[in-house]
Image 1 (cartoon, rainbow, N blue to C red):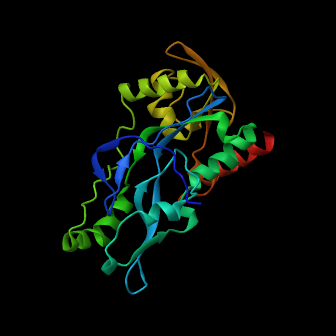
Image 2: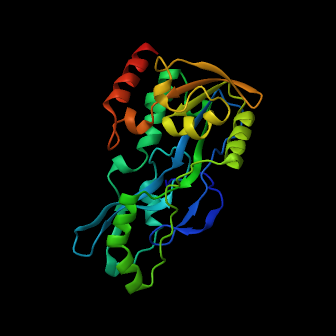
Length: 261
């Protein structure tokens, strides 16, 4: 049976991935009351391996579509990628290595929610930036491998937004706070430095990064514009699951927290 993605929100302006899929808002779909609210950084994407007509890799992991649900676990990647059109003379798109599709979602379930005694259905998930972004290394791969082919074959020019220097403004913080109120969750989990810097600090100036929370994994009662919740600041899934460049310190701190939990 083909994977049936959750409904995804509206396009981000006219932004497109390589090969033309729209960049869309990705947000919590199940709006029932929850036990925990998790705030991450920005949405991920579906990654394909671009194989040239000679059978050699053109790009090992190219973002080609918005993830079908927030903190996606990678299921149905082949079905999503199959819907992305590519001229036959340019080769084919196949799913990238599993490490590129859904690793943060898997880490969230196994290394954050499970130790807390929660399942995915217990959680309301949110990101500071509710859509995919392209970092400099990914942009370089697009410039190197896609742009010439796009010009030669009349393909859509990619326009995935770059990672913004300002991850949330007042309007975005208010939108996140509104989601937190809707969730009725008594516990707010912040993943890494950025949600602390760009969300929590606007309401409670005691902390501006993860290293300010002592000891690691201790909960704190906070008031967010009149809303009282417990805050639990933990490392980002990248650190905890060793996804690419990561911190040994935060990996070890989190392992100890899991053992204690």
